[in-house]
Amino acid sequence: RCGLSYLGLRSLCSNVPGERGQVVAKLIAASGLCSRRDAVRLVVDGRVEVNGKAVVEPGTRVGDADEVAVDGKVVEAPTHTVVIALHKPREYITTSHDPAGRRTIYELLPNHWRQMRTVGRLDYMTEGLLLLTNNGALKRFLELPINAFQREYLVRLHAAHAPISRESLADLAMGITVKGISYGPIGASLVDPRDHFTGPLPTGSGGETQGGGRNNWATVTLHEGKNREIRRVMEHKGWQVTRLIRIAYGPLRLGTLSSGNVLLCSSEQVSCLTKLMAKVEAGRGGV
Image (tube, rainbow, N blue to C red; front, side, top):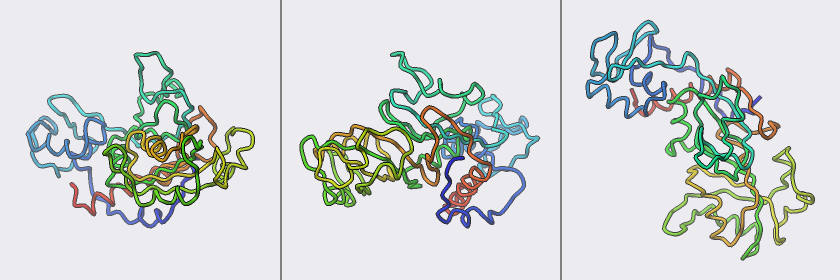
């Protein structure tokens, strides 16, 4: 199973008040049509109908028997939320089709999961944990920087132009600006990769943990996840990233899932995530 590390999530996921039906804007967002904010705008603009009648109140509640349409097209909300974990290999692109003919992550999925949408992206040479879901609202909740879901990576660094040390990695906790782009605090520390990853590693990797050598392994944690953030920051420090593996996304961990394989996350894990989303949105006064 996906390794769900609760980190206090169990208490966050409990006692979410139940109400009859679902808010219409939330249902539209869950279908994957658009974001929650855009769904609210669609309702306010009079482009949404419930059972053939226009509604303009985003907080309008609808039941399972109600038909919701946007611009005359019926919205099909997922019957239940599914989240899957894929161990993305290197040299696969995170898209459904690539004009250049490169292999895509959807080639690794069974047919019945090929309509799932990725939570964020991993670039072509990055491997590790990639989440997919059929719930558009949950996808955006997990992606949005304001929700600060931690992404953890295992990184092999080559000291191309500067030595690697515990101190130089610790400096990243203060944040850094690279070519005019500001990056928030980055947690980084030297580690033994065998403690964090069960897949194949280069011979001698267990010794690349103390710093000072030409090659070292480190864990890196982010909350923003800007495009190619780790590679750009490490290059700025004089280090080349020669292996980049995402080992955790929020409370879900890669664990022992092998490269190229996919796993269905448990109903308990999914319920915890959706309840957390509901609780966070309620706390922000969302509809």
